Each structure stands twice: as structure tokens, then as C-alpha cells.
Amino acid sequence: MGGVPVDRARRVNEMMEPTAALIGGVAQVLQVDAATISPDTVLEGLGWDSVAVLSTIAFIDEHYGITVSGEELSRCATIRDISGLIARS
Amino acid sequence: MPATACLIQDRLGLGTGCGALDFNQGCSGYVYGLSLAKGLIEGGMARRVLLLTGETYSKHLHCADRTVRTIFGDGASATVIRAVESDRDLLGPFVLGTDGRGARQLVVRAGAFRLPAAVSHGSEPCEAGGARSCGHLYMNGPEIFTFTLKTIPGLVRRLLAEASLSIEDVDFFVFHQANRFMLERLRDKIGIPVERFCINLETYGNTVSATIPMAIEAAIAAGQMKPGQRIMAVGFGVGYSWGACLLTAPGELTK
Image 1 (cartoon, rainbow over the protein chains, first blue to last red):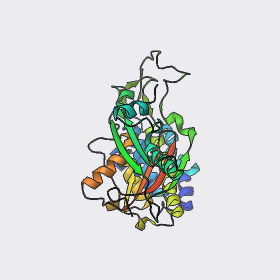
Image 2 (image 1 turned 180 degrees about the vertical axis):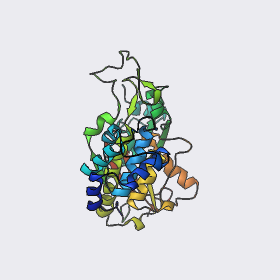
Image 3 (image 1 turned 90 degrees about the horizontal axis):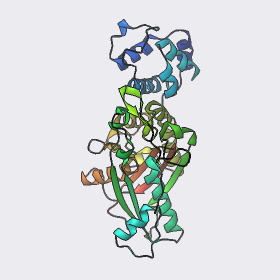
Image 4 (image 1 turned 90 degrees about the vertical axis):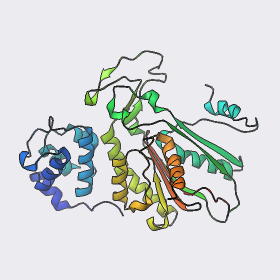
């Protein structure tokens, strides 16, 4: 029962550079090819709407055991921003 | 005014000796209603309680606001809770909670003294190319989702601990039917088996305080839930407000 235990090492790593797993997760949420986006791709215009934010909350919760704020995630412009949010959540 | 409960007492032809009151709780309302009924019965103030939930959220939705129109439906339920002699608890324990910091995340802002409904409120553009006014329902979906992921697994664990039970001891979990995406994520996070977790949204959508009794009724009608089974009901949402309890599936209440 309960969520995935927080993987500290993975969190620290996220702070340095968004991982391929995070980029892949966001790409899947946005239904785009992961090879076409980078940590600094601007998400707006790629379908970064409230449904995408919901799906990303679920992905981060499942993958990292961290529940990020919906409001803060909505304000993230790039995957690097999301990575920073995970690191400080 | 007057309280809707007073109008219903008359329309149902109930005697003038019965008390009647309204309470306004939203998504957690059914569990709160059951807790009030239990308190009234065990406190000796009532032998039978008729708990009614009725929601017409359609009146709160702006026709151009797609963020909420696709989720909510209107619905109502009636539940009779009556006193029976029993050597075990047929209703309860209860775990309740509130966090009013979330009030602005799911709200109709106009309608009370500070912002009267009688004043006309102009519509403004909102998300997804829609529109709403402060007299219409606003829901911050992502923030509500975060709240439930943070709160509901702990609520379920607390109730199980309170009752000295584990997930395996509960026959059926009936959560407030918020939306399928949220329910499936909560189910997996808590570790509830798919076959013991109720999802009942396709016909009526999210009917707020009516979802839990409507889902119980549908599960009984479909033969998924048997009379006498141990059910966990979990309500959560607008407020923020939440509550969970154990109850015995209706149909075989004595013993």
C-alpha cells in the first residue's frame, strides 16, 4: 500500500538535468515523439493544457513518489522547469 | 429559505413530529450525512433517518465552460438509516477532515453577502477557449487532483487502522465518483484491487454528493455488491472536505 518511496538520488539527479525518463513521460503526455523535444522546448503550443498537467501530476506521482502542486506545474514553461519543481517539491 | 428539508417533509406526507434540516457539503456530503444519522440514532434523538442528497450542478455551469461541463451531472439519492440491535458496528467508524485553504479551487464565488447573486456578473474568457462568470462553478482540476493524491491514501489508511482492518478485509471500495482518471490513479496508489473498486461514471458523470449512493445502488443492481458486505465509502472535494466510513451493504441490515 502507498506510493513509490522517494528516490533521493534520482531527485538530486533531476536537479542537475532532466532525465530521459522525465522527457519521455512528458512526451507521452503530450503525444509527441520524445526525440522532437528537449529540456528547453516551450510546452505551450504543444497541448500543455489542464489535462496534460493532470497527466503529468500522475506521471510524477507514480514515477518519483512526489505529488507536485497543480498550480506550480501549470506555471512550468519547459521540462527543465518541471525538473526544478520536482527537485524542490 | 425555507430549508428544502421542510418542503420535502410536506411533499412526502411525513408527520410533523420529524425533525428536518438541510446541510450543504458537496462531494463529501454523503459520508457526512451518514455520520450525522449515526450520531442522531446512537444519541437517542432518532430511530429512523431519511438522508437525501440532491445536486443540480448544471445550474452552476456556464454553457461555454468546457472544463466543467464534461464532468458534472445532476443526481439525487435517498437512504434510510434505521436503528437496529447489533453486536457489531454496521455503520462506522468514521474519519472526517477539512482544509478550507482549498476553498477557492472549487467554488461558485457569487451568491452570498459579499458578492450577492442578485447582481449580474459579466462573463469573462477562461481556459480552453471558454467563458464563465463569478456566478458560475470554477474548478482548478490539477490542484484538486494534487489534493486528492496527497490526502485520500492517508485517509483510507487511517480508517483501516481505526477499524483494525486491512484492504483485504473490505469487500468493496466506493469512492466519490469524481472522474475516471483520478479514481484509477488513487486506486493504484492505494493498492486496491480493480475488481473491488467501484467506477460508475458513464451514465450520470460526477453528481457530487449523490455519486456514492448511486454507485452503491448500481453495484447492487449489477450483482457486484452483495447485501451484508463490508463497504468503504470515501467522499472528498469541495471545501476542501473529506470523510470516509465503513458501512454494511444494504439489503440485509439486521443481525
